[in-house]
Length: 193
Image 1 (spheres, rainbow, N blue to C red):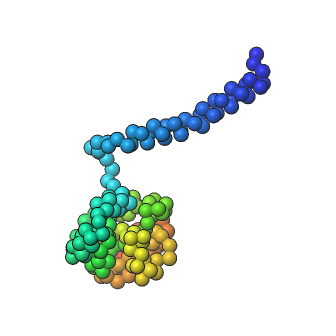
Image 2: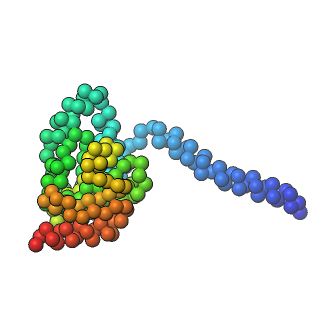
Image 3: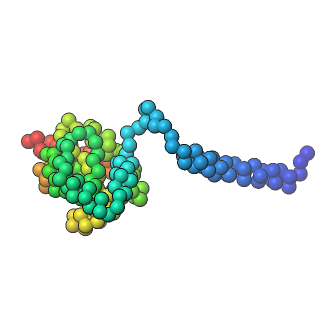
């Protein structure tokens, strides 16, 4: 029969090994992720945050090239309700974005914001769901568009605003997808009358 001290020691070693297992698995995953992986055929649609990160990597040019790109981007026209959350890049006109469809939903967010990341997938599903109603969705990073965030008095994020014919009609602060859908439904109903 084992002594109580031996059982305590063995239990402690076992618990330590179990506690270290996730850390070890995390390290193994990091090493694997350093190698480029082939995209899966059934990979999920990227979130608004992923789109923003991809956009930032594409725009990681010299300041001169960024200035040239942003002046070209400002002339772009936005597609209407296409079932996607479009990222408003630096230099693109906010006024053109909110005038791109009868009803426009704008999500003011930041990549470091947990509730913003949580709301992203809901907005993507809403963009697809409200496509037939002509609702267009945009994502605006407040760090990239600080002046716009100040001008519109964005107190905290996520801050989602609804525009009809370019005019603000409603907003929601926080990750409240059900409440947001209710407000979009009201905007769609009022816009069709």
